Image (cartoon, rainbow, N blue to C red):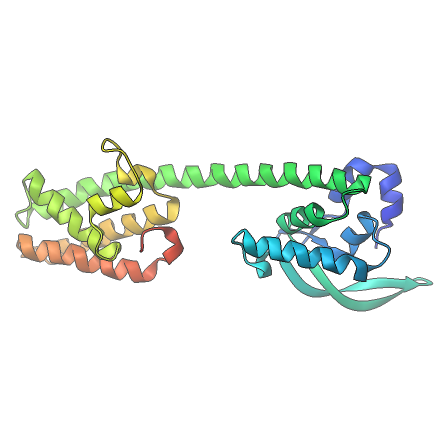
Length: 254
């Protein structure tokens, strides 16, 4: 194990980065024992209450502790070059951020830790947000294309007028959103009259709607003899099945 005291003297600004580890899947983590030494706690048992406070803060912020505080084992130096396998807690960057927020604020290194993890956590959030926006834009484009295809296929069932197509689309939404039509979804998202609901969906919700559109398109092609009523019911049934596949947290379910 690296000597944290030496690290602090040589490069106090980067000590947290020095002790970052990577698991076999390329995911970063920190050892709670390493962090306790960096934050200048004399014994790990004195650091445990700080971890407990951070876990509570994690739950209160809507996150799962098991995603950020992972129980494991690690070799711990016990003197004369010997080591002993001890229980360990491996921490995500977010867990470290919560820990330094709950550590002793009178220590200079804690203040540095708060600055470091606040900045790094925010940078990570921005990166994730950028990836989410890219996915969302790509999915939105795909839905636009497939809605055109779906409208063409629906014409063979007699769905030709704008009102007919609006009713047809509403059936798909009602199946996917547990009975909520386009107007209900629009109101739930608190959108203005000019705003489109597809422009205000996250990537998972868009993916659910894309799957609904493509599956309905394929089913109508296979069953080309359907009339308007049957096509509406098909769209509803497909939406209902997609509802069971995608998780509730996607926002497309009530």
